Image 1 (cartoon, helix red, strand yellow):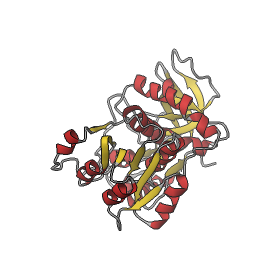
Image 2: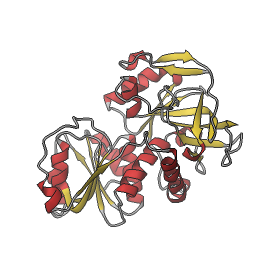
Image 3: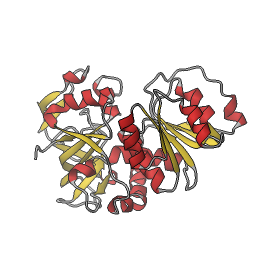
Length: 328
């Protein structure tokens, strides 16, 4: 099969098409003929050598797909050959075929194309487990989403809004402000011209927000603590800035804050299957009713994965960057 080879790692230019054997599904796995794959920040980190796959995972880059089930591993009962699915992979998405634990696959939402469905798994699994499972966001609460125009950001904005929260976000230009407000943000703050802490405190009558979803880290950590309300939750999912910083933690005690975070890829198949089950019950109806939908910025052919990664690292996109694997 064709796949995207990242060689020994480096910049986006190292990505090129190669050929390897089609994988065979192990017990509890399905083999999917891939239609589309999503491009995500962890893919860029793996390509550059800073995010190696966990033991037993495919060394091929890529974490989400849509396609058709073409073979079943021993003991699979949830799916049949011919089923159309989208799935969170443990790796291997940038290829014509990928294996997936059966519990990490989900049906294509009603009315969705294969392209739209492939844009769901990584962002929706990540947002659901961090904002709702760990962050326990409830209707009537408020949340600040950093990186609001990213795939993760727009997903968080839409889901938080759909579940009744008041949503604020940070972005870097006027076009991204408009996109986030359209997605459901109450206010989008341009971090280049506005102080997000001052804006959040003003918008909340100086109470602060109940939760913050952050993928920046670095200097944002101290500022996030200031912007949180009493009993607030800081949810860390990545570090675009350094993860080692000096922080005054006194507000952690005085405001009874919770600072938590998670990474998705190393979690067990059982954990990921549990997230999938909750998404199917709680979020898939929102997708079917068009209350929530992925925002797709651009689609590249599989052979042009290098261009897709260059765009991802430029941060000029709004929403998802996708790969067309079949070329159709």
